[in-house]
Length: 64
View 1: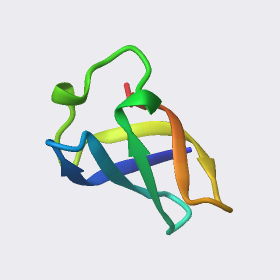
View 2: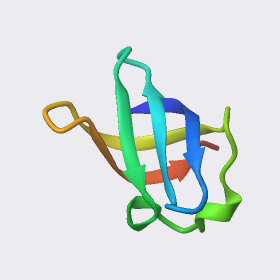
View 3: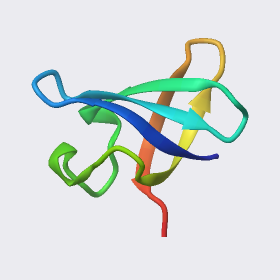
View 4: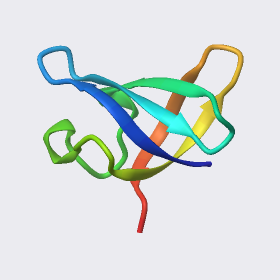
């Protein structure tokens, strides 16, 4: 799925993604693939694997 980062909390290394399905998904630095938390910014387009039940995102990457 695709989405955009809407919130980042640097000191906790967690954030929120607004998914294209209208839901918000939380993620942590352990969910990032091929990048570090410091490479992210609010508004960045990302792809991720959503879990609608837990509202968690995994395998988060910057969209090409």
